[in-house]
Image 1 (cartoon, one colour):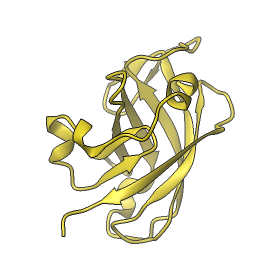
Image 2: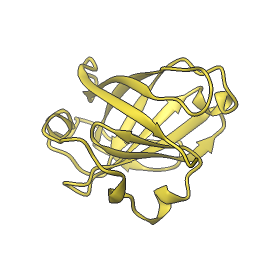
Image 3: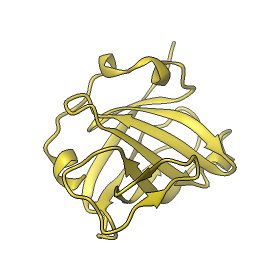
Image 4: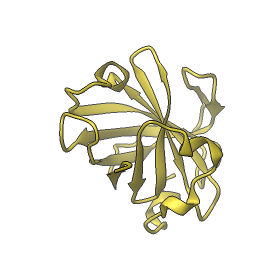
Length: 142
């Protein structure tokens, strides 16, 4: 994913498919639109749709599901993609049953503790140290 993400430009909100439009929280990230897709216990599932490749990346953010009403800070998690440039040696399975050999780790930090908030962080492939930067701006209706 590092090569895939590193080569992409800013995504536009117009790239959203049907499901991200109904999300409660949406961000415009460095790599494309991100939407809060689901909450599984305390794990928030964020979906990144990469416009140029059609790649779908799910970010499993541990603890964010418990911080829906505020108190947000820094989080770590695992991302899983449906495709990519480099497969890992083993597949992983997300808490929602998504399974793939295209995955890695990430960390993100929210700029503000309340909704809506921008965030920034880093991604990495497989067990590599996360080093690919990402930033996301909150989008909300006025």
